[in-house]
Image 1 (tube, rainbow, N blue to C red):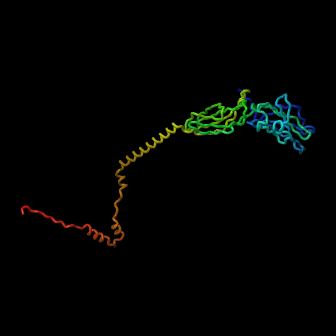
Image 2: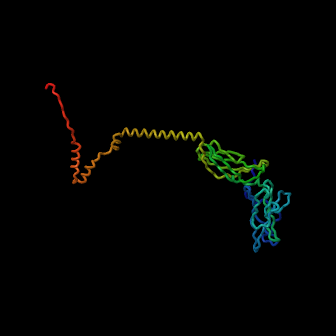
Image 3: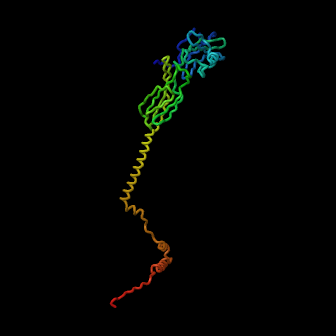
Length: 329
C-alpha cells in the first residue's frame, strides 16, 4: 500500500525561467513568492504572497495558468477553459474547487499551475507551483455527518462521506470505526464499503464511545489515503428482549421480597410490643360533661339535677309479691 505525502500546503519546489530582476525594476515586476496549493477534501486553492511596489499606487494584478503534462501548452485559467476566472485578478489566491462536473480540474489528472504579476505593460517572471493529482495528494477530513441510533445491544451508524466523489468507479470511500466501552479497551472494525454500519454484540445498557474515519481508495493506482478521525461521541446501547425480561423479573422479585420483609418486621414488632401498642391506641378515660361543667362553675345546681334525674331513673321499682305454701300448715 503506497501512501503519498500529504499536500495540505505545498511548498515551492521548482522555479522555471530566468531569475527575476531586482524589485522595482523599471522593466519587470518582482515575481509572486511562495505559491502554495491547498487540497482538503474537495477544496482546491492556489495562494501566494502579494507583490509590493514602492512609489506605485496602481494595483498589481495576477494571472494564473495551467497545463496537464510537461508536453502540453500553458493555458489561462479562465471561464472558457476551467470555468473559474483567475486572469487579471487583484486577490492573491485562485479558488478552482469543483462545484459541478463541468468546471474545475479532473481530480484524476496531473495538473501544474504557475502565477505571475502584471501591471499594465510590465510583468513578472512566472512562479511555478509543484504538480499535483487531487486524488493522490488530497488530505481527507472526517465524515461530513454522523448519525448514531442506539439499538438492542447495538449501535446503528449512518454517515455521509467527507466530500462528493460523484459516480466515478475509480475512487471509492471505505470507513473504519474505533469504539470502546467507557473506561474500556478500544476495538476496531472495518473497512465498511457502505455508509450504513451496525455494531452488534454490545452489552445492553452500557455506554460506548466511538470515532469514525474515512479512507479514499484508488485501487488502480494502489493509492489509499486514510482520513482524519471524527470527534468522539458516546451512546448507551438499549436493552434487548431477554435483558428487559430479566430486568422486569428482578424488579418484581425485589418488590415482593421487600413487601414480605416489611410485613414480617411489622408482625415481630406487634408481637413484641403488644402492651405498649395497646396503651398507645387506648383512649384515656374522660370526665363526664356534667362534672366538667360543675368544676368550671360550682354555683350551678348541677349535682341536684343529677340527683333528681337519678332518683327518677335509678330508684324506679316494681312491686314484687312473694307467695309461699306451707304444706304442713
